[in-house]
Picture 1 (cartoon, helix red, strand yellow):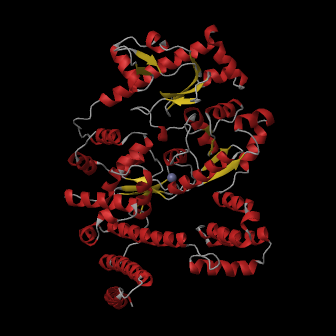
Picture 2 (cartoon, rainbow, N blue to C red):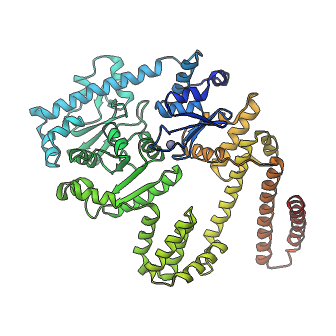
Picture 3 (cartoon, helix red, strand yellow):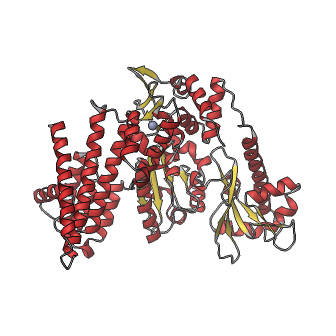
Length: 589
Ligand SMILES: [Zn+2]
């Protein structure tokens, strides 16, 4: 759905961002140029949520959510971007043409149809005809109360149960097909068959308890043990957590969410009275899902099964949570999955595992120490240093260096000395690893581009220079590339350019996280032009170093006298580099 940017501007100009936000954040008060209050997206006692009328943006220093007025509404009202625009438009009395009720009506019809189908499956499992389904469910330890609470059902072993019983009109059939409840038959025209057959049906609810999809567990010998509804208008897998509609109150109250792997684990935990439990939908957790939980609590714990798949999932979820800036913890069960564990040992034992969940750094250290015997002491030490280096606080680093000395039985002072030289060399002298050198280089280029964007966001007029100095398509870091491209498009197409508009395009994802980081760091630069030049020249110098290195290795490998041209090239490059360095020297010393 397209909303012309003139309309967006009109809304933006009329809206008083702090007034709209104050409806959701009653504690919002003016402090200096900005407004601060208690964040509506995470639980807190001292205000870290800030709204800047100058920048037309909000930001929370606690949970790192931020954006413009449309992002705020879309997050707090859980709306897609166009709907959040419509929402704000209604507040300020701007009429939006072309954004009619169509989409909302479509969603409602999907929810209604799914709701009806859910009731049919649920009635069926409780009927004599469905006793096979109920037998399976009770054998797994699920109580009749849970069957009702989670509306578990049974799709009979029939090709046309829904087609016959549920879908009366052509439009219902079309709708059912569009959300994957039925499929078109190949043999006869206009014939359809049910997608879910002989399966235990778990309805998937959105946060407002509307049924948006189904997950079906095969009872027969279908090789696809679990089958989910395909993605549709109503169902985007990455944005949904199983059980959240029933778990959200408990999560908010306890300020803690427990993430398990399967539907049955969620149901088993709720059944045992642990209600702050959710699961992703048969895939690894996504950044969107972590952010969603971050709206309800600050303590997110992943509880994984005691096997290598569980371990892999744990490591993967750490990487994803890193992208979101939301701190998570990892709990590993000593045996089985959460449901088995709760059944055999009871909820109290499970809570002990949850309480002992490890912070990412401890989880990583534990994994490294497990391989200690195989890897050897030096390699282990270097891996541990790598983990410790990534810690943001000096005091924390110190604590973990001490821990390292205990773990490896080495003298603490020499470990501290080794760590210092590890830091100054960027990598250890003990292990030369070319691959990591390349990575370091790539990292520093990425950092430079991101510094550049930070500067441009704060001083947008610099974009005119940047599009001449840089070829956007050649920027290696995809986040930087996407953001710079959008910034320049905005800047050159929009006479009323302001930086907050960039959030219209990046409502979620790594770009949004990155923009929040750069836009809300409050340091201003005395001379933006000079800062720009410094970044530019540093990148140039690095580029030249790169070229020199490439020519030098060509000289090394050249067998005959063919290297003279390389030598003169290198000479030219050296002179160019000298000039650039001289320039920086004069400017800054
Ligand atoms: Zn917050």
